[in-house]
Amino acid sequence: MKKRRTFTPEQKTKIVLELLADEHSLTEIAAKYEIQPAQITRWKTEFLENASRAFSKEDNAIDKLSKQHESVVDELHRQLGQLTTAVNWLKKNLEKSVSPQNRRSMVDKRSFVSLCHH
Image (tube, rainbow, N blue to C red):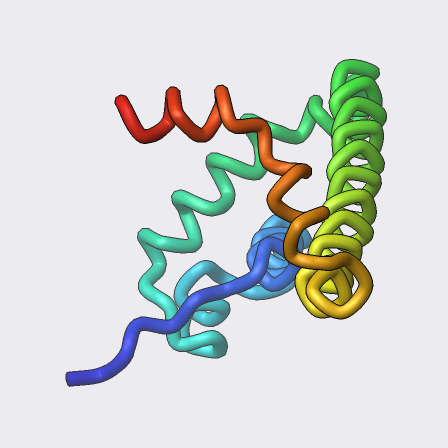
């Protein structure tokens, strides 16, 4: 069984633009890329339906929000990395630096008791 090929948006755009240029027929382009003509026709329809988005200001707003979201996620990942490093350091070094009696005194006994009863 032959594995299904996938095309990137850039590849699809190139094929559709080649069809729109009217230099070759649909059949010729389909044979060239080994794609069914119906598939190219669907890509062309989708391309033309979405062509106005190239000039839309809404997409710029979406891109701006997307970049803001990415920066927030990056900052949260950075903070998570710092906290993970701090916790790992404490796990390694707390035992060496604090006596067992001091470590026991750090535990809130009321919290511990309430956890045991739930």
